[in-house]
Length: 376
Image (cartoon, helix red, strand yellow):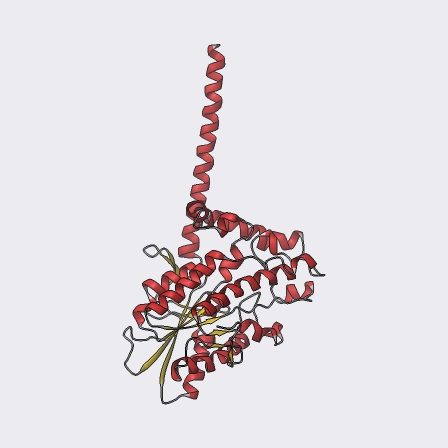
């Protein structure tokens, strides 16, 4: 082979290699910068726990301005201080969840804070604590991990569970690797935890998509049952593990379905005015498809509650009976009135579980009445 030709080939492949190294370095550097910003600088009260590998609230953080009013206690929970060791005369409830439980970080307006007040008003002779263990960005995996390695230390009598939005909004059902995590765990986890891909998805589907195309609002017959047979396996497995963990420790559980502001018949003006946004992938960009996917996640919660004989408060059904445009800040986050409705719905079921010690096999509907979705 001609020496000059060989040299040219070597130079070509060397150039390709150098280009790949430069691209990998840029992508890696961007990933690191995004992780540092998201985990340590995005908001003053939220950080990243490198030991436990998940988001955490900054102990004693205080933020008060025109848009935020956040108060975190010394243990990293929204709300007032409490003793690590539960007092002998206290019934302790821990509300485990994501940003819907965190609810802006001001305890008095969260459903857990309102619940504590309602229970105190109804039972002034009893000491009932409601601890807000909600953290923005939590998914079912983080909730399970926090329960196992932190929350059980506080000796709860009851744990309520309101979780699933981050699972649903960021996991594409069409992605087989995401659904079958246990077969494709390494690749799925690497992709799912990439902050660069998270940024790409948010920019593409949250910011750009609404500018380029509008969601289908005038009827999507095929979308009505689009996810009827979809089982969010990873989410359901995590919820089931939460139930198993609580049962093993002798802690009572109370699960909730997740309500949404999305409803059939919405106009584009409704979407804009109510700050509705859709999942960060292409397959659920109509009202029917969104609601079908939403039902699949609530169905997974219901199935675990049924199989584990855990009381279930069906907030989704309750909110569907009300004027939902007055109960939400956006797609899923409750406003002050929504938090009040949720808290009121929890009072009687919690009384039955904690004060009347009713059997765990009983489930409750959104009005606090005993219901059974299927024969046990």
